Structures are given as C-alpha cells and as structure tokens.
Length: 431
Image (cartoon, rainbow, N blue to C red):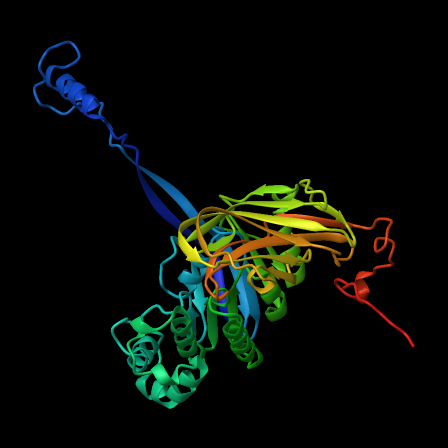
C-alpha cells in the first residue's frame, strides 16, 4: 500500500545533453591559407559573401542517459544502500529524489519530510559566523527558526566548535567546516534522510559520529537512502542494497550479496603484481596528488600478487604530486572479499617522514611474517596529508593479493577463517 511506502520510483530516466567543441586550434599559417581560400574560392573566383551551404557547426551535441527506466519501492523505516562505480547514476538519482533536478521521464514520489545531505556545507557563507550559518544553512534545509533555536546548543555541541561559533567560517579548518555542516543536517529530524558519501570526509572520529547519527535515525524508524563507496558501512548500516550500473539497476537485495556482485566487477582489473591506476575510476581525490601505479612484490622483489602464509610482501605506490606536500602519509588498506577493511598499513605511523614531496614519488612498504589466512584479498592504496585527515588520493579496490598455504614455519598451520581474519606471530614462554 502507498501508506506503507516512503519512496516510490516509476520508470525514472534522466538525459543530459552534452555539447562538445570539435574545433581544431589552427596555426597562423592555417588561418592565412584558409582566409585566402575563402576570399577567392578554390577555383580562384572571389566568393560573393554568401555562406557555404555545406558548412557545418563545430559544436556537436550528444545525449547521455544518467538514469534509464529506474523503478524502486522503499517501505517506511528501511535503510537502503545505493552502490555502483563513479558515473553509475547514484548522485543523479538522489538529486532527483531531493528535487534538485527534474527527471526527463518517469516519476518519483516521496511521502514525508525529506532531509538531504548531498554536499556537506552547501548553503554556507564564508563571511558569516558559525552561528549565522547555522540559521542560514538550516533554513535552506527546511528548518524553521524556532526549531533551529531549540536545537542550537545540540548542534554546536555535536560539531565541537563552541569556541569558534562566532568566528567567520572562512577561518575554519576543513574539519570544523564539515562537522558544523553535518551537525545542522543531522538535527533536522526528517522522515526520509538522503545521504551521499558523507562518511568520506573528516577524520575517523567524525566519521564514527556521522555513522552513529545515521544509525540513530535508522533505529527510530526513519527511512534512510545512503550512497557510499565504503562497503563495510553499507553492510553494517543497511538492510537492503541496490547496485546501479550505467544508469540501470542490476541487482537489488541483501547488502552482502549485492556488495559481492559489485566487487566482482573489479576482478579482471586487479590481477597481477603491477596495476596501472592513473585512470582508475573508483577513487577519491582532492587534486593535489594522483596515484598512477600500484605494485605488489614477493620477498625477492619480483612483481607477484601471490605470497605464502607467513611470507613477505612488498607494496609500492607510484604517485605524482602536482603541488608540494610536506610529510604526506602513504598507506594501503587490505579488504576481505566483501570489501570489509581488515588491515591498515600507513607510513607515518611506521616511522617514515618523507619531507617535501613534489613531482614523481615512489613509496614502498614491506610486511614480514604476513599474518593473513589463505585466500584472496582486495587492496586500496591511498595518500593523505601529515595529519591523516585530508585525503589527497585514494584508489579504491584496485589491487588483488592472493595468500596461499605453503610448507614452512607458518605455511602448514591449520588456519581456518572461522577462528579469525588474520594471525600475528608471537613469542611464548612457560614455567
């Protein structure tokens, strides 16, 4: 019944018109030659000035379907995750549901008050104070002044910016900015909450606070639509997941199963000890640096994505820095086959102080006595600033590591995944 639905989407499509300029930049010699040709014509006879009927416009228009025939029904109180690679149509769907853009065809109906967190901080004015921006941003999100006044102290406390609440937000750090923006939106108390990749910003403590706020919203019976590239959060928070590919729904069901289908798309690109990631589509970057190559090697330094239990593995991150960065932190996240992160390797906590990074940089990490159980793991190399807060570049799930049992000190252990995800060599004594 409609009364049991929070969102109903019927045959929703969105077409964008893309205009491209095909004009080739001419040299001075080309311009003179073409000018003479236009003046006299190819046969040497002067033109009358009439336009050549064969001339065509250099501007060509193409159509691109960001969404195509999407149909979806979401009951009240359901937490649904929307996943897919960049360009799959996730953000377009949320923008239509948030009434930011109109569909080309089809319809979407939402039953209840909607709160949208599509771009954290949209509606902030840099010259206004934090206090003034709470009222400005809150009103843009649909909150009344009375409601904002009642929740003002809670918002400020959530954002942890009490000392700076009357300072212009242009003086805020990026972390303070996003904390305040999320705090305003988190206190809207909507019946339908639409969230687009909020957990990709801020430090670990802030992300945990965001996740907790979303869990509280979900547990109170509200409906949540959550777009994220964090597969662990999708599986932890959502009761249902939808996979988009090229603007269409390709799978809809239990999050763990849908995540497996999504990750299986990367299989062919991840094999081998050297992965070119310059154009890797699934990445988060701020433009200061770009990972262009990710390499996996064995104990002998040979490029090899297969290593034995208890063996040695070496990771190399080749990156280009487009502006100088002092003491960047390099890292690799190791995921299981469902995308859950299980190991976190980071250079700055292991003693590397790089200094000034500029141009092409190669960062290498060596892991001895690899404690992963036999199996296949996914890898995500990343670079942040020295504070490990600002993400410079993060290529997600771009590599594969195979761990196999082998004779030797550790390889013949009876390692069963039901006992854990990995083991750590340790020294024991008895008396």
